[in-house]
Image 1 (cartoon, rainbow, N blue to C red):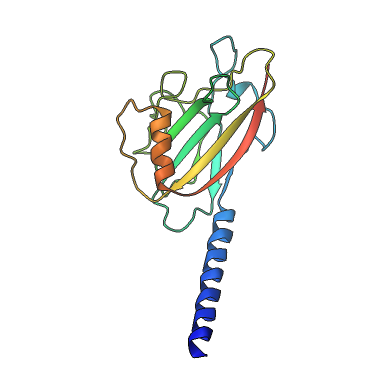
Image 2 (cartoon, rainbow, N blue to C red):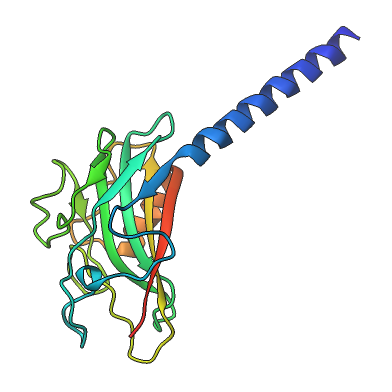
Length: 188
């Protein structure tokens, strides 16, 4: 009888810990003062090129309540609706220090000099590092732009300097503890 009771107590404690972890992960948030979830991107976040005329400025992003054990962050901006068969990577930032809680507007320049020390940017599908704004084909339905912050269990992702977004994404997924995201739209 004592063994059954101990098993029930252990299972109850395990369940409570698992639930507590889920609640903690659910508190992890990513937001932007300039882009509201499910809103339409403005001219600042539209690419300037490929037939699009925008300011190509990365938005301000703020996050809170990273899960315990976070050693670094990675940020991705992805359009799953691009007519490529594999979507379109608009921004990939990794090795953001665990102490980072925001990125100011405009830090996504190709040289990355405005990013927190140690942070790196991967090559986007525009062929270069840095933020590449929205630029869907004319007449296509509004595309989804998914901004995702990944809490990672490693301080650094080790990839070649010219790594593709897919390779960096593989390493992000292999080291992710939790993620927080929001989606915005843009069409033309």
